[in-house]
Image (cartoon, rainbow, N blue to C red):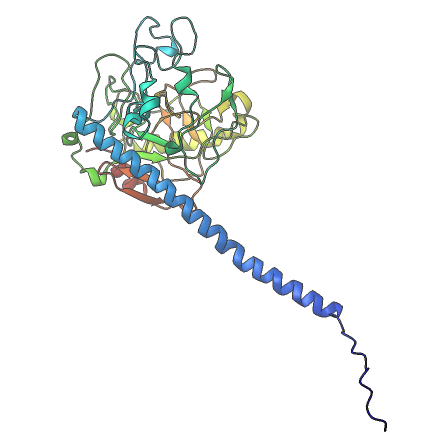
Length: 357
């Protein structure tokens, strides 16, 4: 008896070219949808860590104040620039003074406070072991740490994403007329001015202690905005030692100066600018550890100094907020809280946040 054959062969048919292309297109769409979400989640985690870094700095700041009755000074005198090479003290940054309150006690203990923060009287680098150390608490994970080498040490620069605020001020020296109106100030002599909580009359929750900035690229062949510092060579029509150095009183000449500095970018190539913003955390220098609250985050203008090419950055200038976080940057308030400031913040609010009073 015959019947249907049980040995019929079943032939599997694969995808046609059109079907394969459709599948690939669907996968591509899914990747396009998921990748931004993954990247956003990663950035959210990095931003949270950045916020935590600033909170730890804020806690250290208040522990320092509890022990010393004031906030740390922002360096005196910076004789690594030749003011007086016989003085046995130096321009130690607020970061260095806070290190012992940031679970960095061994490194803090390694600091020789009787030596300069940078060059000693022989021209050798003092405290070299500490200077070359990279501190995670001073680095935002959304940014890249420096890749360039400190020539004097032959080692990669440690980097620093968080600056001590000089306020809404172009001035950095507390011994000048119209001194900085922020929490920190550098002193060019031993007549040191310290800030206590009682001096913050605007309220600790309304005054910036530390701000965030992007670390420079170290690439001197191209000007990167907003990180690079243009060596503009003057303050334009701003008169040092007057209220024009402080905002909002000096708003008109300040904004004119910012505009002139931005216009000079095309001619300030190579030696006309410095790409090393946030190079280190140990020395109290403008653009390294000291900055100001003068513009909203991530401005379209470069940082700018009144120093000329070849001069040190210990000159009045603008070293302001920036970050790799989309839309703004973090600030640490004097009460220890951390806020995210949007790029679109208005200037009057910026200046009010920077000033102690």
